[in-house]
Amino acid sequence: QVQLVESGGGLVQSGGSLRLSCAASGSIISINTMGWYRQAPGKQRELVATITSSGTPNYADPVKGRFTISTDNAKNTVYLQMNSLNPEDTAVYYCKAIIATMATMPSITFQFWGQGTQVTVSS
Image 1: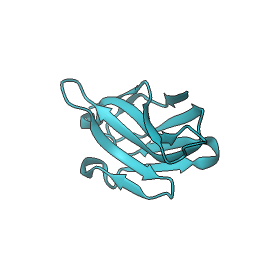
Image 2: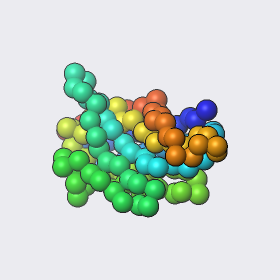
Image 3: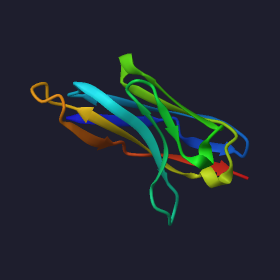
């Protein structure tokens, strides 16, 4: 199977920065897309940013210009550099990946989620 392990969350003051990492491991044939989502208390999980295997990023409007998503394909790892953080960014951040796991059917992909990492921004 596939595991996604996130790291890099924590407590930071408003205006500060954090860098999240998510490493995928296991039965990976290819990775289609990786991304970050977040869920604040009492709210639904929402998209933060995604990046395709060719490196095309997509950002949610609230984070445009402040967050940068990137990948290290050799390490099957996605990063989220978060700058100019504000209290509204406080949430549990989840990594998601769309991955092909079967060599005999490489066009069949599955969705995997990480366990989440807490980001807290104090005012």
